[in-house]
Each structure stands twice: as C-alpha cells, then as structure tokens.
Image 1 (cartoon, rainbow, N blue to C red):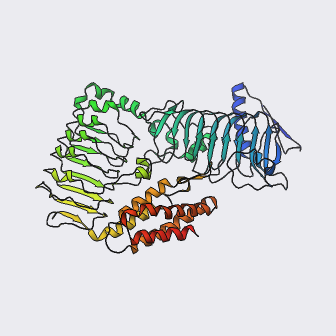
Image 2: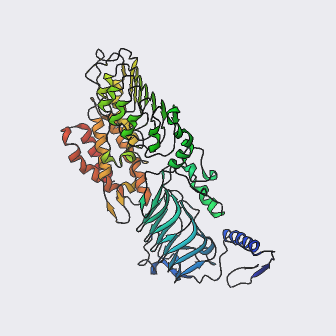
Image 3: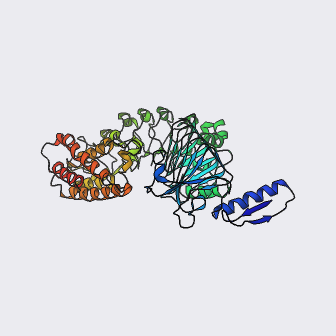
Length: 576
C-alpha cells in the first residue's frame, strides 16, 4: 500500500507498507483513510471548484442557514465519486478555508454523487448544505443540522438524522435498511426501509411507500444494544451516528417485529393456550394487538402498559376470564363495546391515556372494584388524535360508573371533568371517588357523600391547562407555517385555543388568574417562535390570527371578560 499526503500544491509525504494478503491491505487502507479524513484530509483528485454563493442562488433549492452573498460554495460539474467519507462540518476537510479565505458553506454536485463511505455531519444545530442534481449513493448517512437536497433517488445502508434541525429532501425514491431520524425527511418517490421517527416512536416497515402499521418493531428487536438508552423504546441516535462513522453496526442482522417475537416467545404456550393465566407486553410500541393474543381465552391478567394502542379491537371481549387489565400510558381514546363481556373484571387501569368516553356496556362488568382514570388526557393527546381539531375530552362524569354494583374506588386527576352525575352510586361497597385538578365548581354533598372533589381548585386547573398545553414546547412554528410553501395554516392552534377557552368559561368568579397565565404563555411562545427563524413576523401572524378567531370562538359565550381579555392579549402581541 502506498499513501501520499500533504497540502494541495505542496510537497507530498509518501509512506509504503506491505501485507501478506490483499484483504489485510484493504482493511489497513480503509482504516488509514478514515483516520486521515477525520483529521480533515481528502482526496486530491476530486476536481472541485469554488463559486461565490451569490452566483448560485437561483440554482440552489436546498434550505440554507442564512448564507451571505460573499460566502463560498464548492461545485462539481458532472458525476462525482468521493473515495472516502464526506464530512459536512463548518471549516473542516473539503470545506476548510484556504489561506485567508472564509470556509465553504456547502457543496453542489451537478450530477450523481457516490460516496464510498458515509455522509456525516456532527454539528446538530447547523451545518453546510449539500445539493445533488442526480442520485446519491452512500454506505451510510449520519447527519445533524445540515440541509440536504437530492433531486434524484437515494440509496444507502442506514440513514440517521440527529436532533430536529436538519432536513433531507429527496426528489426520487429512498432505499435504506432503516431511516432513523428526529428531523424532517421528505420523499417525493417511494420509501423502502424500516422507519423510526425518533423520540421513542414506533418502528414500522415501509414498502413502496406504504407503511405496515400492523407490524410494529420494538427498538430492542431492531437496534444493537450499544445504541439503546436505558429507558424503554429509546434510541440514542447520536451514538448511532458515531457508530456509523466508526463502521460499527447499529442494527441487528435480522430485525424482528413485535409480532414475530411474540409468536416466538409464545410458540410453546400457543400449543396449550388455556394454560396461560397471565401475560405482560409492556413498552412494545404496539399499535395493534397480535391476533394470537386472543387465543389465550383463560387469561386472568393482561398488562399492555406503555404501548401505542389508540383503540382496542372488539376481540378483547373474548377474554372473558380477565380479572385485571392494565392499559396505562397508551394514548387510548375509548374502550370497545365488548368490554362489557369481561364480567369477571375486578381492576381496570386507564391512567395516562386520552379517554373521552366510557361505553354503557361497562355496566355489565359487575365485579369491577377499582378504575383508575388519573391523567386523562395525557401529554400526547394531540398526537393520539392526530391534531387539536380532532381532540375529544371527557367533560362529564361517566354515568355508567354509578351503575357498577361492587365499585369501591374511582380516581381522576388532571381532568376536564366539569360536572358530577345526577344520580347516586349504586355500589354499597363504595369507599371513595377521588377527583383532583378538575373543572368541577359544584358538588351535591348529599347525593355524593363519598366524592372527594375540591371545587375551589377549578380556577387553578383552568390556568394550569393553559400553562401546560399552550407552551413553547407544544406550540411550534412548524405547527402553523409551511416553510417550503411559505404558507400559514392556523387551524390546529385555533382549535387548541378553543378547547382551552371552553375549559375556562364555565369557571365562576373572575378570570384574573387564567388571564395572567395566558399573558405569560403568550410572551414565552412568541419569544421562542421569534427566535426560531429570527423573524418576528411569524409570531405576529399567529397572534393576529388567534385574535381574529375569537370573533367565532367567543360567540357561544356572549359578553365575557375572559374572551375580551384574551383578545386584548393576542392583539398586543400581534402588534409587538
């Protein structure tokens, strides 16, 4: 092996090394190249030239980072092969400055780009851009804040996108082993890959652009243990990018879906399904339940904690021997009517979901003793319903609970409940009905002597909902602004304001506390939106739209101090 290195146009240092086999030589060569590239070296034969950014503005379609007209861009005319990693970091490698010149801010390839290594970018907040007019082929992609645009197709091994500042825009198809990303990936053609959208999301196979939501994958069944965080279902994408750069695997040789793993684990039990009494499937990213589960007709305990079960199938009613059902932390919206078939059910855990109704059939669960409805709705309510305009909440206490003859304990907390049932509880065994942080302002203590509810807390709860739901980490610029189309759509944020308004208006007495919270949150949300693109017009447009929307949202309430006060706050921020 012969290695020549040195400054462009300067004297080269030459090193020679012999090996017994070609394989050993190639391995040493790959290791040496990676080490040199990581220090900023690059192939001397790439044939790139420097062009002022101002001359390319009409041609560049990739999102930028506010480059100045005097910035410099590397350009290659025609197809380009890079015989090592391409690292897109400011002032590094290909993009390093020459003498007194400023560093290059991006790379434009007027053809196809083949990278005989990985495409890498280690800065998560920003980074030089890459625009490829043809197709892109790379052994792997691990990027952070760089903006990437490929007009053709992309074919790679693993594609990792760290944090949410980067963007990959593909004009053709995208083929990869996995697309694991926390930032935006838009594909005009078809996707063929496993897809993991970060932040503990589910992993699903995508074939020809169609996602198979019925076949979820657990992170432990897809990624090697070296990239998994301690928390269930979480992947450390920064570590995955690092392993890509080091040529270490991030995926198991044969990823296994939850259903396949379930079948494997349950194979022997399925031979005698009536012998299984207890089954736990917590934190498996299940969006649907495996059909094989309903073969276990003698189940008495079923734990489905921490999955993604927005709805449950009617087949649940086939498990008629269930005594204990744990559904905590799923984003579950409602129970199937067949829940009434579970006549032996004793304990029902629905904590941390998005339950907005309970079916009348629940009254047939005559053995039910405890039901936990704490934190309904939970923080992922918008995601669970697919947008604020689709969100439903539990306003009135479910009357069906008063008909359960053996009910002992009911628990609510952090709820939109604003009324108690007008009939007494049938259960003679009732010990307590605990309702904390609700919107209930009146309670008939004679009719409901065992109901523990603080009616004076309603004002604070209404303010807390504003503090929690209308916040800088729940209302984002991308929720109402399409940067590519430069178009606003305030529908979803207006729906959120409508929900918060509806929750506060029934509260009697003055609205000073709620309005004070609104004022603080408006300032905070507006500040973060202003900072996101350093453009104050986005926040002004948002709050102007919310001010105008109150003409419609406020109609049902007539002359109302909260509506008037909120309109003034929105107007003040829109004029800031």
